[in-house]
Length: 193
Picture (tube, rainbow, N blue to C red):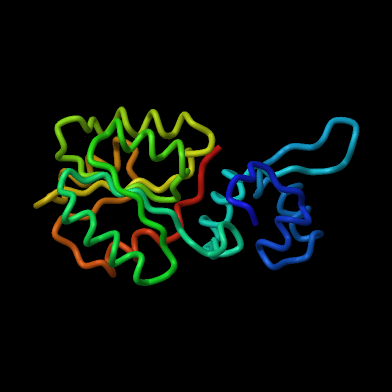
């Protein structure tokens, strides 16, 4: 599927999820998969952010979207460290990594590439974790982006605070790449409506 697509039909969702279109209709009608109906028609449409959220909640691989790659934005003030993480992710073949050295630059990159995951060094001077979370969650195309807070020597207490501020998870630097991948790939909790 094209990465710039913003809404899908039930047939397209069925192909992405490898199920029958009727299964997608059941998910939609039961409220598990959110979307809307075309006025004057029974046709259903599912926005990409709702599809991604549904797939993550149910542990479905996102490989039907974006040709199997997960876009990861690394906001880190240390370009050498960020490049090492980006190279490690890219070597797997399942990830496209993008780099930013400031919150402003990260915002520009996020608008351009719509990352699935943003790894944010919360120790940077221009990073206000709660504001970043609020701004990203208000943008529909970024509302399901997984936010991972990180910093050198990040404590569990500070990590718990990041979760309260809107992050999905946290990871102390230095970290092993397999631990980052585990956080990127784990399903998100069921949303409450």
